[in-house]
Length: 162
Image 1 (cartoon, rainbow, N blue to C red):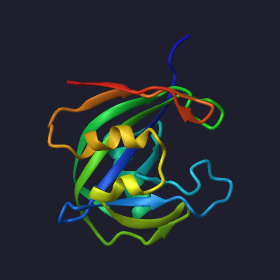
Image 2: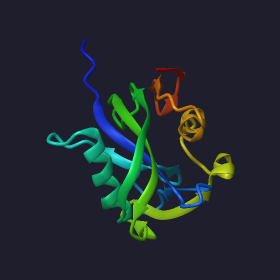
Image 3: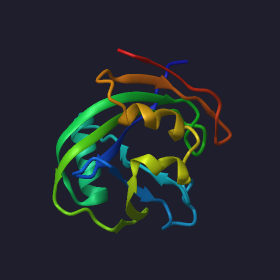
Image 4: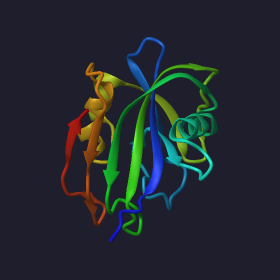
């Protein structure tokens, strides 16, 4: 059976001093599958856009800021991650410069600056704890991972670097 995932972007916006990251605390909708968790910003790619344009659009929509410097840190295949077991393929970006003042909230929840050194203290998907160190490390090479989910739980994690 061919792999036909939902293609998405996931972005982590660094503060100007590079010690904090802007996350959304998913606390606005009781029916949200991510309720209570902290997530990066992003979403589904539209049919007529490339992944970079999609990332910029999602950050503008969700945080109200324009990305002026960003880099692809990696890709992650999430077989079975969707609400109904759909497969997802995500392009993970680090945003190192932006223009504008970020919103304080959006329809998904509160936007918060979180110290990178304390990310492990915040509720998030268990799988995020596996790949987030790769987003913020000093290795310039992109990572490419596979993180299958079953029944809302991460099954395994493996990655390689180019």
